[in-house]
Image (cartoon, rainbow, N blue to C red; front, side, top):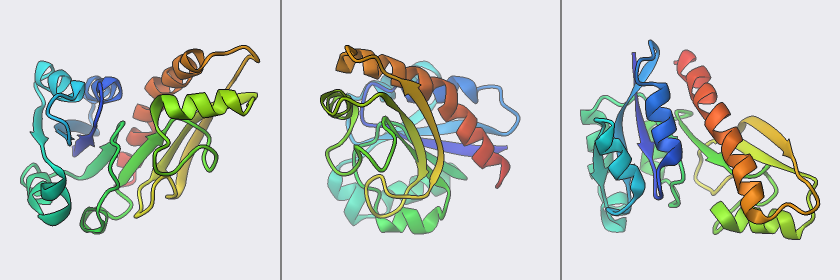
Length: 189
């Protein structure tokens, strides 16, 4: 049984989906949800589902090893980013080589990089007139959205799709495929 930690900055719908997926799974379980925002919905969802959480600020995350100490305390084997907006520091990448994954709401390398998240991505996809969008699940390295791609899943777009409609299509892919990708990565450990 592998222990999973989820980092999230927002509402936490992907975090909740992962917690539920692994709640009775023989391969792994979500032990900890971490956030850089005390008011993040992910913290509330974790509490409701009986998962412990940790909130940290920029100084703790980048200038101490308190986050790593907590991951070690919880015996975390694998780290999942689910709407976490800060760049992961090198000390965490070194502690979890090839064991930190992220999901991006577009088909990388398009629409990635610093500042490209959530509705900003969907707006850019619509403005560019893309015929498809999707998700990219990738390993985390020291740069935004540039780690090795594990999987991509696509969805066709209609010419008149709004950013909100694109978001709904992409969220459906996230909920279906992210837990499966994490499961496949756990099987390699």
